[in-house]
Every structure is written in C-alpha cells, then in structure tokens.
Length: 510
Figure 1 (tube, rainbow, N blue to C red):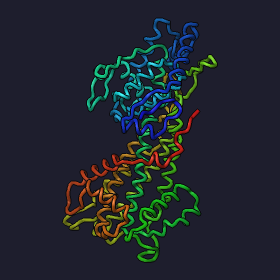
Figure 2: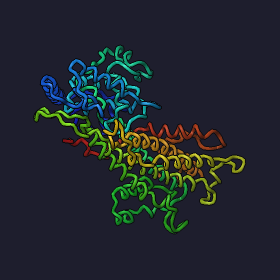
Figure 3: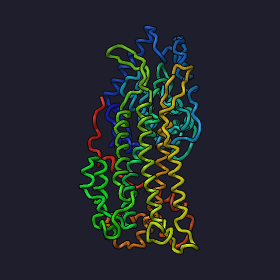
Figure 4: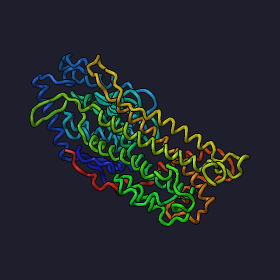
C-alpha cells in the first residue's frame, strides 16, 4: 500500500501513515502532467523575457532588480544559501518528514512552476527516509517559512545535514548512499521550495495528532480519578449535557459514562456527598471545550495541507503569473494559538484533580498517597511538577499571532508568527502529557486503596497496562523516571482514533 499525492486529497490518516509508519509515497500521474505543463509556461515566459517576480527579479525589497538570463540559476541557489538562517534546537525527524511530505503535496498541484524532477526529489527523500536537519527558530510565518524550508531545500541539493538511519550526517553522503543525484535548481525552483507554510503546518499536524490522542487519554485517566475519589456519576447524565447542546461536551460525557458503566467505585448523588468539585463534575464541559479547539484546528490543517502556498503562482491555462500572498500563515497562526488554549485547559483541570488526589484535606486517602506519611513524601512533589508545567503552559499560551515585525525593508510589513505559535503549541502538548502522566500515577495509587477489583472493566484494563510501565508506590523513589516513562508510553501508545472517528476525511479540496 502506498500514499498517492495529488496535491488535493491528502488526509491526516495518510500523513500519520507516512510519518509514523514510513508508508511509501508516489505521485499521481495527472499531477506529474500538470506540473510539467505549468513548467512549460514558465520556460515560455522566460524565453519571451517577461518580467516575473522571483524568476528573473530579486526577492522582497529587491523585487525591482532585474536578473540577467545567465544568472537566473545562480539566483535560486543564492536564495537557498542566504535564507538558511535557522537557529536553535532542530525539529524532530517526525516534523522534518512531515515538512517533506507537505511540500511535495503542495508542489504537486503544479501552480508553482517547478519541474517534475523537483517534486520527485522530495518524494525520493521521503521514501529513503532522509530527513533534513532543520533548526526550529527563525521563521516569521509569512513570505513562507523561509528559513526552515531553506534548510529542507539544502538536503535536495546534497548540502546541509540530514538524519539518516539514526545518524546525523551530511546530506551529500546520505544521497550517495541511496543513489539519489543532488538536484540543481533552475528558474523559480528555489523560491518555490521555500515560499510556503509547511513548517508551521507540519508542526501543527503533529500537535493535532498528539492532542487528539491525549484528549482521549485524558478522559480515561479522569475516569480513573473519579474512581479513586469515589466521584458522583450523576453529573455525567446524558440529559444534563443534552440541554446545553454542545456536541463535544455530550460526547465526552457519553464516553466517560461508557468507560465507567460497570464501576463499583463511583457513587451516586447524595450517597457520600451532594456534588463534586468542578474538576470532577465539569470534566465534560472543560474537555468538551478543548475538543472544540482541536476540531477547529483539524479543519484548518486539512485545508492547508492541500493548499498551494507559493508565490508567484503559475496558471498555464490562463497563461498568467500572479504575485499573491498565499504564503501568509495567518490561518494556521490563529488556529495554533487557539489549540494552545484547549491544550492548556486539559492540563489545568488535570492538575486540579491531582491536587484532590494528594491533598488529605480534600479526600480520605493517605496524605499525598504516601505508604508511610511523614517519613515518606509520596506524590507530594509530583503535584509541584504538575503545577510548574501548568504555569509554564500559561506563559506559552500567549498568542504569537497578534505580533508582527516588518521585514525586508518594510516590503513584508505584516507577518503571522505562525511557526512560533505552532512550536509553542507542541511544547505545551508535551508539558500537558506529563501532567496527565502524573494524574495517572496518582489515580492508580488511589484506586489501589479503594480496591482494584471494583474498578470498571475499561479502567482496570488501562490500569493493568500502565502498571507494566510504572510500579505501585511502596516507598519513596526517584519519581522523575516514572513520570517520563508514563509520558513516553502515552505518546507511543497505539491509537487509531484519527481514522475511526473521522470517516469524512478524504474529501477533495478544490
């Protein structure tokens, strides 16, 4: 089975298959034809000496500088070299691989005016699992993700560094090992490689996929916490959520009811108390709202994954080249800032449940779930770590998209900062996963005091699997290792929710 790129039909499930399962990629025949057709239009216009931005002119503020015919190819190589200004930590291989896939998909529509061989080179790197080393920082999120995509482009040319078979090596060496000739750029092709939103979109896709998984896991962990605290199940009654009308809220309540359907640890209204604290009673309302942010982002990512974000654009049928602004990342910048709020609140409410699990003034469990309170601190400082992560998330949640700093001598006078928003969203997601991991460790300890044999079937199965990762707390130990192990387990756990819960995904984006 292979993923076929048409430029218009890429799904999140296909991205997941290519990025995480190393599914092979091919180009649809019709896309190759369209790419070649639009390339001929570019070459015809060059022959006629028509002035076209970035093809026979300089870039940005230099757009009025006409480039001589003999210098057109040097112009493209100079562009890549000069724009490879990324700094800081590198993106993960998953993000780099996603960027390759999304750039190949965008260029395969043909409106960028590149040769088919350039798109084929991107696909060749994907299939050979050669992943460019791309620094995370340096993009303004308009004029395209110029710096990150320039580092991606270097790999196609046999320059820069790449990740290959677990090593970080020079791009030329990796291409040689796979028998892939380095690409030589022709007119328009350097610009076509870097004018786009594929860095922020790639980070956004990874964030979305991980956020969706974490939200489902958060519901399961919260259900276990309900058991550990003998929570009141009445608050999840379908009628309560139906009359408010938010579908995501109703869905969360329904899933929690299903998870806890055979639990003998939950209680009914008035049995132990009349009502629970908000962090328990309002799980559907809060996580449902987080789901709303995720669903919004999903819609925007699906559109952007199948969008043409280059400049200028080549319309061969109309015999025209138009300079526009499809490279501007504002739609993804706003989406990423929005998902940050949902991610933040998922962790925020989880930390409050951790507090209720460890605070002896809020439950009847051993203080801080300690096996020997006083001599041993138990989960006391785990709550500190969760609080620290949640507080850091609040800082990262500041919207990047409201900022703009003019560049290129004020020619590019409004930018999106979308890549910053996406990077912060992924960082917040990683923080939040650790908070949920801490809640799971504490919830497991609490249900042990209540009686594991009285747990619901689903939470009991989850408990048994998690206990293979982290043992019960019988004495104080270095809990940092436990937190990281559980967080890694949550991240790497098998999950098919993207495909199963969104059958409508494979639509065309014309």
